[in-house]
Length: 113
Image (cartoon, rainbow, N blue to C red):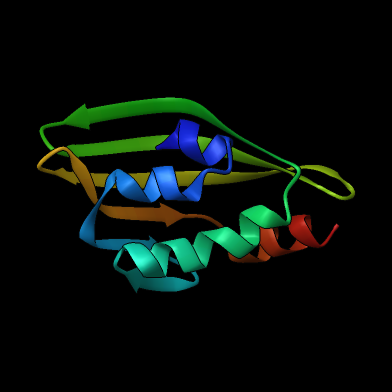
């Protein structure tokens, strides 16, 4: 999924999710279902010339994966990095829950340039 998002291929990323996936950007709120995830990601990624997720640490146990990342986005003013802690729950080989925790004020200021 990370590789698909780095390619800005939202359709490929969403195909790796369950039909009833919950995508929760904790400070912004959750959306449910593949179409809602696609609608949330597409306009944002369209604004970016490039996307990189630098996974600093990652652990998994059973169907749960957690990582600490720096999500980098190439915006018109240059690259912006946002520190993120992510939680993924996998069901039947697909992502059923994707929850990201980050500082909304810091991310908004960075993305505003």
